[in-house]
Length: 149
Image (tube, rainbow, N blue to C red; front, side, top):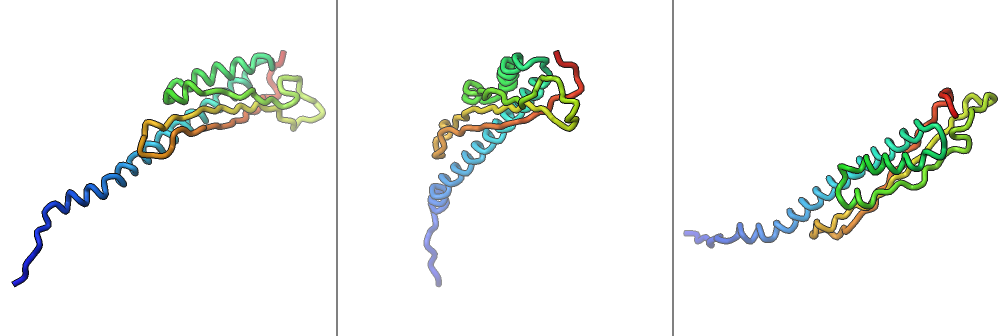
């Protein structure tokens, strides 16, 4: 006759051992999801700002338009990113918004916009991540055949 040891309580012990790892995995998935969503919003803000900048008629209008578009584009971002979102000064190619050079028909003038923000992850206490800086750059070409003032 064989005797068996009672295994009462082993499931609870296994849960106590595995639960921290499962929670850490869950928090990591949440952090990656927030990062991916915010990265997409920052990328979209840079793209929208660069395209809006190329629709202007003069160089002087570009910085204000870029700032406004970034502010409007970040409405759906998490609070920490929305509050810290900023566009670096737009980088315009040397002859941007000038008359195109008829001697160089292949010249392409561009506007580049970099948007950056800080995503706060401190509410996910199980992870060592506190905040992550996200930045994206987009370059948009100017139409050489449109009317310039």
